[in-house]
Image (cartoon, rainbow, N blue to C red; front, top):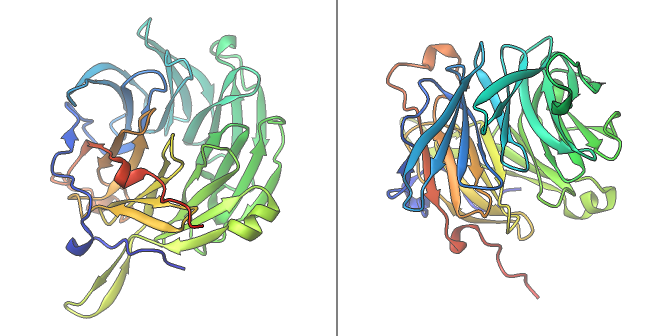
Length: 354
């Protein structure tokens, strides 16, 4: 099904992005991930330039760099610890690293046999780092044990892990060959269930609902699926829809399909955003099956997105997303992070119909 158009044409440019602020001193190569601190207006940015940068955002919308630390290869993922005191990251050096904001020191806490595609901080009685990799594993790391301690636990996956997310007691991993692995963090040492993605093409991103009761899946074919852990809820409420597509009339009529690169859930309202290679982002209400607002083309692919802790800032990276291979990553391709102040009209759920 399709609810609401999400093409990048001017008739769809309902969100005014002209006042969006640009993050100062951006990375020197493509941005791979964004994450806001749960405690303050700090933003961590992971990049292909092998660095993780931490910025502070001011009340006036300005930004300034506060810290920087390095991996030995491109960084693919970054997240914050619940107390806002540490940042964790993983990358193509197969390493999981933690940066302590107070000491200004970074340390490697984990190692995989392949690139680390995603990291998350999960609650398994105490905060622990979960990392997934192309080596077909999820590994858990206890920061308190220090470097060299080895993983607390290792989970074997059916294929290479491309994407992962966690919320409450739900951890979801999307792998090659369209496998989706669900892990109940009450029992983190085993996979609760493995299902096939309802989307026909390669999984690009998974994102958990704030409630931890389900997740959204995005694919390279410009489609999004709304999924629930509970089978009865899935049967009643699950669906998929088309997005990030563009109808062209010249030089010949065609429907152009773009990868869906990023899905972010609003921390307060539970609505969500999608962003793609077409250079547009959109806000959706899954419960009403309704597209709330959409942007026009922002000048380049949107590689990743994030809401801040109260949902009034939406960050998006206009950056090369590698969907067309290395030869299209030219010197003049835009590379910036923009900050969009959200309004309730853009992100609040629609009133329920009686």
